[in-house]
Amino acid sequence: MRTDVNRINENTPWQELTEGLKMFAGGTARNFATGEWRTNTPVLLQDKCRQCLLCVPVCPDVSIPVRDGKRLDFDYEHCKGCGICASVCPFEAIEMKEGIEP
Image (cartoon, rainbow, N blue to C red; front, side, top):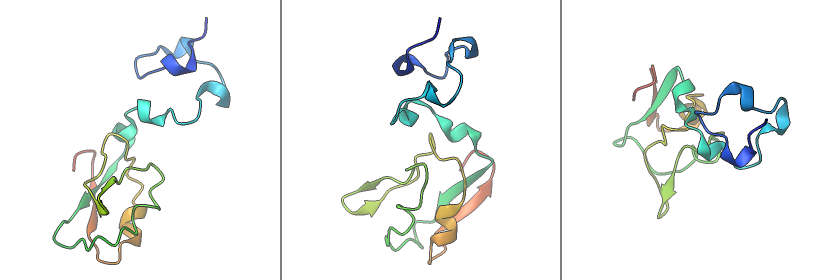
């Protein structure tokens, strides 16, 4: 018996998962805390950040929330630590740290 895609979560046994790419429907990534996968963690240096928002559109995990036109701290539950945000920041306001914790 396979589990309905909308009821899959982090506690679903692997035996109940559907094989292949049809396992997940679009937009289900928010249901999974994938941040624990990372080996490096971005840290926002608020004093250096100029709110240019160049980091926001390049984040493949949509882990840089924006409210009222200003970026907030990282969504560490979903950030996988790829470092793309740090590489595009012209003000060096994002520092990559080794490990899961910021």
